[in-house]
Image (tube, rainbow, N blue to C red):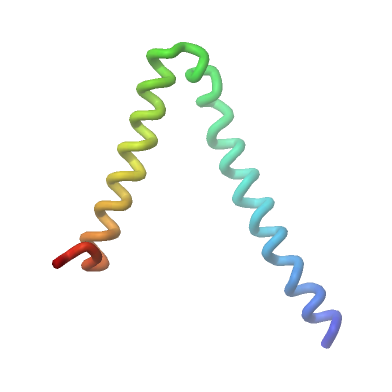
Length: 67
């Protein structure tokens, strides 16, 4: 039984590694865009707008924030 829990305890580390690897590989092509201030501002604005959109959509879907 100890071997089972030892194996199960390794899964969070594996999942964290996979998620970080995917994020780093997805964001790597965007790194050169941060060298130019205009494209950096545009890229940051797109990220903020995307997170706001997801946040507002989830609030509306879950009924949060309704008085």
